[in-house]
Length: 114
Image (cartoon, rainbow, N blue to C red; front, side, top):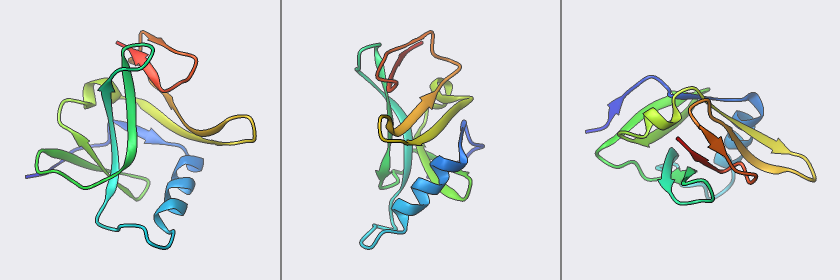
């Protein structure tokens, strides 16, 4: 059974706006929620996971800015205090992660070490 928790991180206004835009697109699967997490790999050892996914029974759930989110149990310790932002510029476009728990990050901004 999914457990409700307080949010481990935050989304900036621009990230919330972009996510709501994506969720409002025609054909969006409304049964999916925003998965926030980490996985092994990347240039620094761990990579961020951010994408829409089906909730699993062992997920924890939380809400950030009106956006329903899910996370694998145990990922919170890597993500606590993290801020997710959306950069919409021509040179830098995409979601960025600012994680106070990372001991080092890489140039791509999507990989970190703890």
